[in-house]
Length: 471
Image 1 (tube, one colour):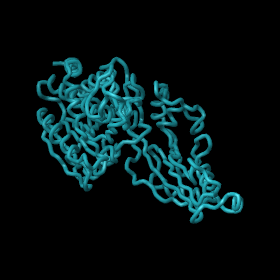
Image 2 (cartoon, helix red, strand yellow):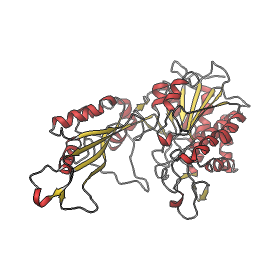
Image 3 (cartoon, helix red, strand yellow):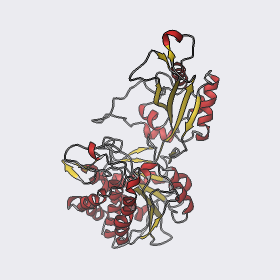
Image 4 (cartoon, helix red, strand yellow):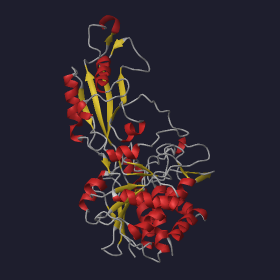
């Protein structure tokens, strides 16, 4: 059999309805990890759906309880052909956000696939049941085309808590490091740069939230009687934030600035266009760091965003100086930023600018630190060549997503090069009503992944970094 046969076999799964049937069965599981009432569905998705399916492909499977109480389990599935062959780790998550059943458009349901043109609606179609289903379907067709062998070893790790911040994922990767040992991670989550743009991203920006508060007194006081002679917390908070990020969105806290953008990252971003999609917001050309392109600002730089800001009652303002003000700011940051210094840097900056009365009241545990595989990695060159051979055009390479994923557990704890091949797009309504998957993206995804898995058994980079053909 041939590479083309594996690709055509994968595409046939879409044309003959097999892929839709498998995905519809998976979408029907109400696996809402943010809903305690869905605990049984989290278990069932793995034990009733994924374990039998993977065992048919020759995987040994193990359900691993979460070390975090009342959180969803993990599935580790392994298929070893020869210890001398490379090993790929495939990751996905079977949990979803709240279904929000009542908010879906008439005729749609979060728990069944409804087709409208080239859109398949249903919760998890895009995030993430559809995406890991594409990868595993393509893997199965490569196995079939090679007569029961892949030419590499495979470990599948599925979690049931990504939408709740991946509790326990780092712990299981640390505890089961040997079982999860691999040469590369190939996974799918998040969106393509655009619906018609095959994309590979190599990591993600980190995200760190910091809460700020200023309480001046126990109650508000009439602004006519006291305005101008008592401190206004709203005014102070607004100015404190303005000292950290200016009116053009430019970060002013010295300790939060990233290192210069590496040349390999700058080259990868040079031709990228941000936005322009049907439902994308218009890019503000003058917003953000000076001297950078929109792509460099989004994927290669740090940004401080004001997520929430309040004093008094904005919906029903009173003639009173408020007693307190609150805000939450978020640093989205790239590799090279010292995450341990985020809170100290903000504290030092506020003190130095006369805002010592503003308290830092809460900050994130670091759920998803920044990661980035070098775009010059042999694994990146290999993946680009594979996709180009399959589709006839090279994919767009993003050094990292603008958003966050738990990629650090694979890059930092397991020490893997990480290749993410998304099969969705930014306007898919993930986390919202009317989530959907695009059929053209499914078609390209099945083809790309079959090509990648075929090539993994043929000419994957060796542990020394060069591409080595294998018989």
